Length: 218
Image (tube, rainbow, N blue to C red; front, side, top):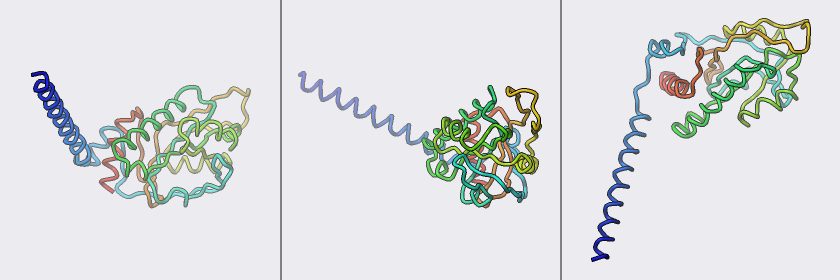
């Protein structure tokens, strides 16, 4: 009798596990095959995609390893570019943390897209943000994130082309100065063109939905 009861329990557990697997499979399939959001829907959620991607120029920049960082480094993958600085007390570390969560979500839900993504922080404070400073800061949030710095004029020119406002600090009154800057993410497509931008709030789920749809719309 006990043997029959045990067999019955095992059978029930097996059926329940199979049912859960089916539900999870359908959920994953629904997520992966969800229709792409239109450009209008994306815009409503703060992700603006240009009708015609824009070419831009960049020069005189280096990454956090001190290696030249040029337009070629932005080709072959989608790039989310954030303009910030290491002495930023709140918005910058919060943004990098959210991008790290986005990276984790994509690796879990859309691993192929995750492989086609890269994340950059371009410093708006190159006076203090040397490559060494960035190397101790940016990879802290994610070892694959890239910090970029260079001459203030070159950084400012790049920011203007990507519609990211900031006020360069050339002659600070003290060493604890802050830099006013925009918080949008600039989106660069795999061809190396400025594809659009994403406005705050930069929530991981929102960013994942936006990038998944933008990748489908390309």
